[in-house]
Image (tube, rainbow, N blue to C red; front, side, top):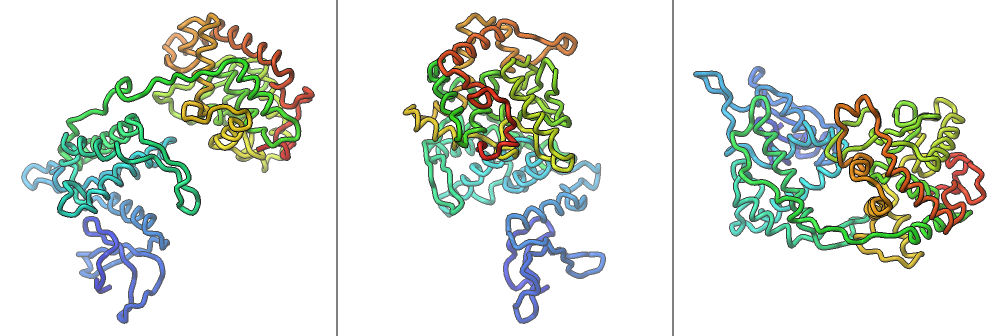
Amino acid sequence: MSRRTPPVYQRGKYWLAHDERADGTRRSPNLYVWWYDSATRRERSSSTGTVDETAAILALDKLYLADKGEAPAFCHACGQSLAQAQTYLLTDAIADYKIEWGDTRVSADTIAGRLAHVVGFLDAEQSLAAEGRFGHATSCAAACSSVFVHAFRAWSRLQPVEWRNGKGEVTVSRTRSPAATEASIAQLIAVLNHAANAEPPRSDKRPIYKPLPARQVQRQRRTRIGVEELAKMFAYAAEPDRQRGSLHAFLVASVCTIARPGAVVDISVAPDRQQWWPGAPTIDLNPQGRTQNKKHRALLPVLPVLDRWLRAEYAAYMALKPAERAGRGWLVNHHGRPVQDVDRAWDTMLKKLDMPTAREWRPYVLRHSLATLVRNRGAEKWDLEGFMGHRAGSQTEVYAIGEFPSVVRALESIISDIEKLAPGAMHRNRTGVEKSSTMREDRKM
């Protein structure tokens, strides 16, 4: 191939371009990875199998990382690698980090979003041309400096957080919080340290800065809801002949576990998840195969209300043919399939109940409110910390499972009060007949 047109992307000896004939027409719509093979003294290529530039660039990056000959240079005298932060581009470091670490994590989407914000800063600086101090050619050495992070903070502060629909149109926009900026900085630090920790190292520098501490950038959430508001939410979610099943299950599991929203929608009765089985006195919020992280997921006692919901979902799961059970068994589901969140149903509920729709009224308000209610009803500090996952289990608790009696008593009193204000609203239907959410798909959301 004659390189008549500039490559779409280039890294090391590899470049990305189309396979063109002599007259300039393309042999294939797909992009190809090209390189010069010194052994055969000719150019070689490999199809990426896609026309999408992002996917093709990812394919080139993977090929580059797999090529040991494209590793950092080595000293001919001692054989040690010559990691050069000055020549290792930040954009390459981000791409490598995502391939080798970020994309393999459960939080891959969150990682990608934080790093996309960093790349957005580089794009903005690039568009300033001579006036920009940084850009696409920013090296890891420059990114490790305090000058870089100060410039990034100043830029990030002015950038709103936006949500877009399928057409790319901005549907929601809000001011970016300092905590969101510091989260991107923490992810950037992880990228730069990953480059220095690689074998062999790709960079000889580490960032000299740290993200600002949480207590300095996070606003304390002040909004709490009481039992009366909880009862209204349950009454709304349990209304018959409404497609609110996923919201209903979410509310029940949230009250019975005080778990984070992400852990609530991750509850499943599928045996391979090993979270719960009929008769089990406990439920493990951390499913089989998930590595515990800073947001610890606890092993909790199963309250009677939650037990009834889990048994009903398990019965529905077992009623399916074995070939149909894959991807089923989720407590919070949409026609039997898992959901990432219940945000849309939650927003609709707040509007219908004339409740505020501010940021502090997102589903996370349940965890904050229940923790407050439980604490004010006599839960002991040690029990509450363990129940909420704020205290990782000690070696003793590997042998002795915590029962958290003071928290359980407080939750049972809260559930009793909700039942008085909204009778039957914590059942899967208001008549008390336990039917499967999977079998009654017309009621699911």
